[in-house]
Image (cartoon, rainbow, N blue to C red; front, side):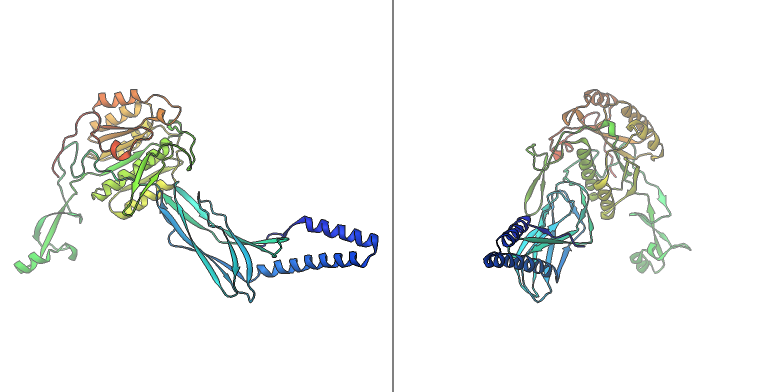
Length: 435
């Protein structure tokens, strides 16, 4: 796709004046000047159009996924496949990734030559962004005419929320709060082996314990039991009316909320002053924390639609959670108390439920207390909404949590998440049971 030729209108004004001067005076010098200006314009037009031919623009992206606090890297290559060199070519990028500046002016592009450059962009916002399209602009040496061509083709980039390492979070991993450890035999294959027994017709080969079979000389099968660690659910409240936020730009002078550390460097990343963004970051951090401890983690939130991921463990589960958290928005219209009443009825006994919310409506505390009576252990992560913007006071809800004996954490704007989520929770102490 070509853009119309953009020209410097001053040269046409000069050409018009030269035409009037030549016709008015009739002098040879005036006509020679008119012929010279006309020749320059014609040569500039043909030069510009010829300069546009034979160019090929290519984007090389290593991955279509990145994370807040990490650098997204890609390579842009431009190739001159024509016989003639190009004096200058300006490459422009129309991507929507904030802070992504892939454009460059290439001077002296030789014939049959390729010039490439690497672009590194620090991802500061989560979401799904569009990479491309690219365009290039060139013109004549005098800069009289400029013409552009749009190179079609776009790809998407998913930037997942930053995950902050949490040293410890109560209830402690490896313990089952609220009741005794669940130990029940099951016909299904699980990660917990209860013992061995003689082979029974119908047992699969993956149930056979080969060392015992070799030692005894007869087929011995493994017997499994249910995982003694209860499922863990993360409920993220995305009710639009409960959220609070302050104006923010990535280049602002707001205090940095937390620090992401890598093996090679420490990048200070500003967390937007929004309960939505803090809630997403906390959910992602807690999910990674428990999945690394081999817990089965599920996720539920009411945003535009009901977003639910059934409990599972492993890196694949973390990837699914982060992809949802990358694009989820606080546009829900169902209060948290109603969500707990509806979804809590489907939670099994001994389940651990972590609720992340800025809601100042204490009815959700009542609902969480009711779930505890059914054997569902609840933990509240309360975001102090008033520290993020205009919002009701959170202290009555905090007092209600303490009075109910529910473990809770309070996170305010600018808090270090590692410290805020690793301290002893407020409320009653949690009993620990050996798994």
